[in-house]
Length: 129
Image (cartoon, rainbow, N blue to C red):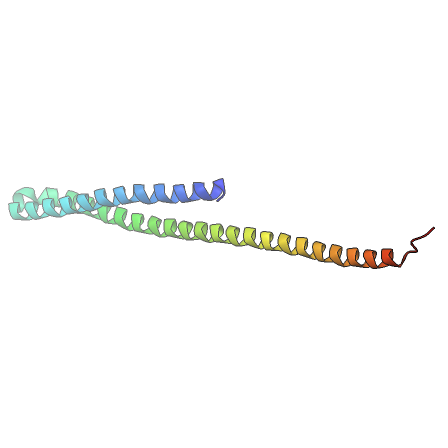
């Protein structure tokens, strides 16, 4: 595994971890805003001015959740690309090894044939000078 591939895996893990924390906070804020809105509704006219604030906070939390979800999709895509790159590298390295072994066998085969021919020619040489 190359350093770049390792870095990509670490980056994806870091992004996902941070987004998970943001998602938890956004959901808590959304719940708190919904609770505040319910309390403001029960309070009636005395808390009418508070309702737009809770609506804004709730909308902000929902947008955050949507954005985190979208970023998670990109992080998942980056993860898949990294896995594919890693697999391609493994396959390439294995093919290179197979190619090298094939070349070595071919050379050995050529050498063996040549050596056999040389031995036959040597055997035909006169033994006395």
